[in-house]
Image (cartoon, rainbow, N blue to C red; front, top):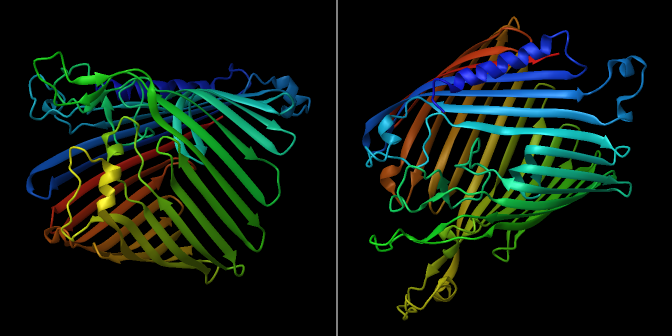
Length: 519
């Protein structure tokens, strides 16, 4: 989409939605329009010096929510409960994230192959979500959604285009089943933020077969899954989720094929992108504490790739203490070459205490350890397996396991005032690989409930033992102001300046406008 037309399209949609909200002839439904506009200009340079990149970015989001579709106003006036009939609604949010600093050579491979960046877009237009939802079918037992939607379950955040149906049984069990296509980069109105990592996909329309063979052509990704959860049970809430996604289209299996052929070696057909099952179990006892746990089992890898547990105790009305532990093993899309390599699990154990000293003053402190399991080659000089016949499983037998340990510390203090707050937050990470230490001081104050003033300053130091020349100290600050135009409309302006020994000076100016229209 041309960069000068995309903002006009969003503005047209916004005006149309606003007109809808104020039209006296509109049928009985409730509408809400949300808009957020952010413009920023900034300069960056890499750690080797030039070039200095001057960027100008424009971010626009537009949300539309229509509820009580088809409700009869006469029914409302007769005091008949809305719950007696189906509840139909529509929800949508659009996002335009344009970077006007992107230069034409970065977008053209034919004329500027040295500067070309595959998949780069000057103004990507994204339909974040857009779906119809119907609730309260079969006396409240059934509900359904159709369109682009988010899924939040034991497997994490995810997005797909399709249909989701839910049934709430009268036996404390809710069941969701869905099917459709995963949202993928390179497809219309889509981004790749929710697809599995380890693969570079996008639109290859203008690129020949031998150029960037590792940049894969996006194809549709059929998917299905289900969720089973407990509902209405006191204290305990459990959830089990399953998801499977297929890859389609051609994928390069050997990017170094003979250039005299028609192109790199590929394979096609349906194949696994991801297949996982996960579960979570939470328990909350009022006045005593809470416990949370969960895990994810990757069926493609035949391995538990993530698990976590947390316990909170309500020591008093103003003190909460807890312990968190989690373990994560990196996972990748089924088409990714990274599946061939060994992955190293990371485990974090953290204890924390949150204290309310007064009604306005709160503080927290946390500390713990983080360790990464690594396989180190034996140093006894023994003969290693031949590389041509070994694989990741056999070669791991000639390595010894070890752990790289980090000590973690966190502290924060915040004081809430009548129309603002001030606070400080600090951290320290120290281990065999290096260290990171620093703190932030921040404040925000409203004047006469209209004008806003805010500021933040931070000082951080990090040391990298593997690359000592990249160790440095960084200082940055932000100054901001704002004005509340209305109860739900706010304009803000921020100036940010950061400096360190690696990249020198960095600057950013950010302006934003938040708008909400209700009827």
